[in-house]
Image 1 (cartoon, chains in turn purple, green):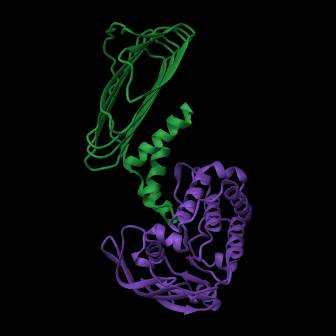
Image 2: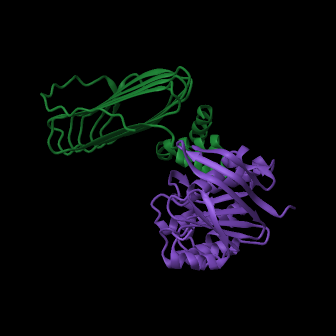
Image 3: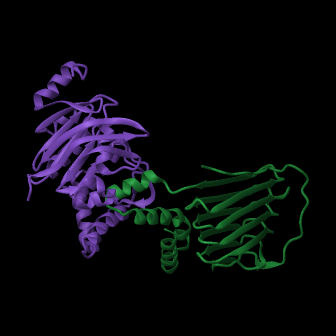
Length: 248
Length: 228
C-alpha cells in the first residue's frame, strides 16, 4: 500500500474561460491533515471543485493522481467510490429525497460498482443510527428531505454524517467552518477527528483559522492568486492571524 | 424557468349545459386510478360528495384526455391528479374543465409531467366559478420537467371567476432537472442516471403518496427508468 494518497502536479484550471489555478503542486500522504488557506478569490473553491469533478471546471495543464489512479479521467461518482469525499461549503437541498434513501442509494451504488451485494436493511439502519449519534443528529432527521429546511449548522452536521457513512480515504472539508457557531463547530471538528485514522487523510480548506484550532493540521499551505505561495506548520496559521494574507 | 399564462375573466357568466357524466350522488364518494385513459364522460358531483381521480399516463401512450367536472351541490370536494410520462413521439393532452356551479366546495388539481424524447404534452386547465358559488376553494398546479431539447410542453391555466368570495390559485412551471442536485448526489457515489431517477421519482411522489399503491409506485418507477 503506497503512502501517497493524492499527488497534484502542475495543475492549471479554468472556469468560464478564466484561468483560476496557475500551477499547483501538492502531495498528501496517509495520516496527514493539510490545511489550505487563502483570501477570497484565491482559487480555494476551484481546487475543491476540480478535485471532485464538478462540471464546468476545465483542467488545462497538469495531473492529479488519487491512490495511483488518474483522477481527472474519473467521473464524480467514481471518485466517491475510490474513497474521495467533499463536505460542501453550501450543501444542496434535495426536495423529495429522504436522508435515508439518499444514503442507502449512495452506499449501495458503491457496493454495486464493486460487484457486491447491497447492504442488508437492518445493518444499514444500525450504521445510520451510529453515525448520526457521532455528529449529534437527532434520529428524526433520517426521514427528513436532504438539507431541506435545515439550519446552517444542521447542514454542516449532515455533511459530516455523510462523511462518516461513506468512510472516505480522503476527506475534503470546503469552508466547513463558515456559518457555524462555536458549539456546532466543536461537534463538526470532533466528528472529523474521530474519523481520522493513520490510513486516511484530510484537506481542510478555509478562510479562517477557527476550525484549525480544533482540527490540527500537519501541514499548512497558503493559496493566493491560483498558486501555493507558502507552506509550513502551525506557526503559519499564527502568522496569518497576525498579519493577514497581504504578507505573501 | 416558469412559463405560464392565465386570465381572470370578469365578463358575463354564460352557463354551459351540465355534461352527461358519471354521477357521484349526494354524500357519495368516488375514488379511482386510471391508467393511460380517462372516462369519456365527465363527472357530475352532488352535495357533500367526494371525487378523487388520479390518472397515470405511461410512456408509449398518446391520448387526448378531456375531463369536465360539474360541482352541483354544496360541501363537496374534488381532487384531480395526474402523472404524465412521455417519451419518443408520445402526444398527450389533458384538458380539464372544473365547473363550480355551487358554493362551499373545494377542488384541487395537481398534474406533473416528465417529457422526454420528441414528445408533445399539453395541459389545459379551466376553473369556472359561477356567480352563486361563493366560498369556493379551487386550486390548480401543473409542473413540467423537460428532459430533452426535442420535447415540448404547453401549459395553460385559465380561471373564470364570477363570484367574489372565493379562494383560487394556480401555478405552472416548466423546467429541467437540477444539475446542482445531480452533482451533489454523484459526489456521494450515486451514478448520474440513478441521480436523475431519484429526482424524477421525487417529482411525482406527491401524487403517488396520495394513492398509496405499491404496485403503481413500482410501475411508475419502472417507466421513469425508461425516460432516464
